Amino acid sequence: MVDCLFCKIAEREIPSQAVYEDDEILAFHDINPVAPVHILVIPKKHIDSLEALAREDEQLAGRMLGVIRDIATEQGLDDRGWRVVVNTGQRAGQSVKHLHFHILGGRDFGWPPG
Ligand code: AMP
Ligand code: ZN
Image (cartoon, rainbow, N blue to C red; front, side, top):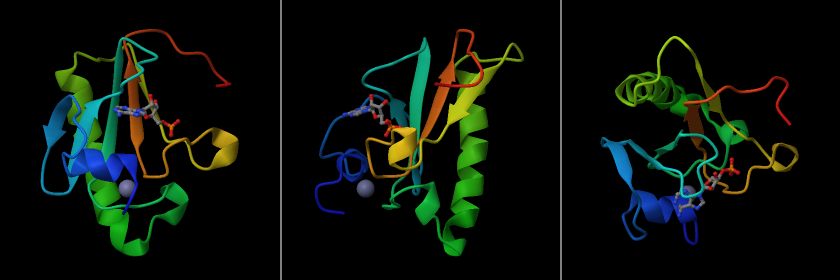
């Protein structure tokens, strides 16, 4: 999609620190980390948000969860715990309108989130 930051990152028009890539998925370090491990996992195809996920995208979304688990393991996150966040829409503070999963780890997290 024109003028989408994460589409440009997926197309390598804008550089990122990638940690995983396949034909459908890219994962890279968040530019403004809020935890010792903070990685974003995106579909390469443009999907606005989790709310916009179509039935045809569900297999991809499921595969993304497996990729997230593998990245967490690779990053040394373990059974002490870690978190996945998908901010969806304005009230949740979604700032980039291209579906992304935050992997957060390496510290304690509070609940409920802010
Ligand atoms: P959200 O607020 O859930 O939409 O998350 C968007 C995330 O994208 C934030 O954590 C930003 O720090 C991150 N971000 C913005 N621009 C970049 C970039 N160029 N490279 C990596 N992460 C970015
Ligand atoms: Zn996009």
